[in-house]
Length: 102
Ligand SMILES: [Zn+2]
Image 1 (spheres, rainbow, N blue to C red):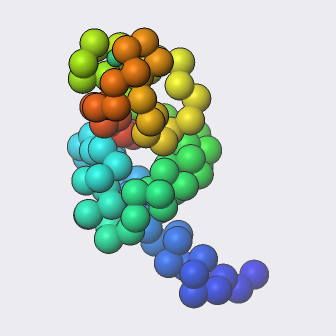
Image 2 (cartoon, rainbow, N blue to C red):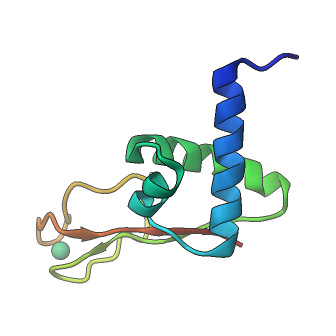
């Protein structure tokens, strides 16, 4: 099977992302700056990585988003993307989730 340039690039980015997160926890903004991709792409890669690291017997660990106003923790959030606002106090300042691979 031949991979197109985009796929090759994607693969490399994912490998880089896994390597980064194995060394230190990072939030989506830090990852996007480090890998020079948009935060939206970061979340897309993360959702794929979640599955691929399972094969390596590793886990994508997420330190959940937290409301900066009332300390509400988004514990049960299934999606990795940043929530728009707090369901409890409706505040929009949400502390970023930290991703790591363990
Ligand atoms: Zn809140």
